[in-house]
Image (cartoon, rainbow, N blue to C red):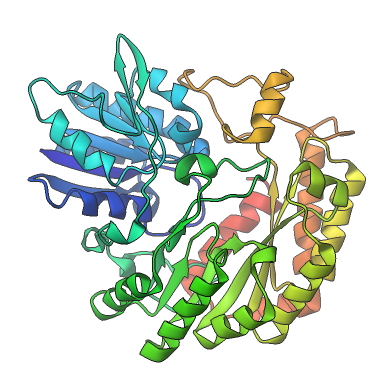
Length: 457
């Protein structure tokens, strides 16, 4: 059996090794199957190029990972595969099917996986090879038998038992140096899963659950050693949602890194919860090689903080960000504008906060109602949103909800543009930005971001 794991065609500007697919590939090693990973984002594939690739490789199973914003492209790619060979089984996992299980109603999709799939996917592949497969006992699987059937979702309790990702199937040196990275090549790692917090705009808990589960520090460092010795990485990125939730574990991890003297740079690009940090931990992280920290701030308005159920203490925020900046960490803030209950005044407060903090970078996103999030369900209940995952050509990439007092999306985008220009045009931030040792790939990435977020193209 030939299995193709696919990162779909997308306009996402961050091109990083697909960690979830590498985990799935590793889980299939005990089986007698051939596995490939195709990163269409890295390869810059068109739909025609994808068609040619499928024609040559002719897989029996195609497994897509999909964010909601990529789902319309996944449907097109699945349709291409089915036209070439109607016997190909199409499986979709990742955030979108986890948040929108009704996506299985699309005719191009045979199966979906909700949540974590490393334990269930090998069982599914084994069952699929039988003459009379029985899918009922495979957790997290969604399938069709006249109607759609959703098996119960189960989370993986002991993350140390998972095999390390199969990085043999990708070449780190092929991936571009991210615009925030210092060293090259670099690799993503995941040290924990699960989020106990309740941010209304986020649906991440549908993928990895509410319960926080973490790998032991020794297990993590063992993987990092392999990445350095076998794959020659010079930097790693921790993509956890809650890396520092267990401060004792994070501290122990740093101590082992220091003791092993691996001499690797690292950072946390996915954002860290403010209340999980203290000065002592930040100092230890810096000593262990951490050079950058992203903070999930979201809004400068206390009212919107409450509406989002984020509830940041602004005094604590200023103290922690200032201290991280003081000890030489590069600081980045994540912000959202256009939340449904937001006013123009609220957005201006966010812009003002971003400029008042000692941040070196700011990512300012337009609010998008993601399926599975609390705010999405509320908007749906209030009939302010009406999107159906079973519509073949639906497009989730366009925000459809306007905040209070706005008559068009253009007005919100104008404020996003204002925020980015005002933040980055200040001498301190601009000079620090151009002082970075930028590679050609980083310059290209910056250009794409300017084109997308400043000129909206």
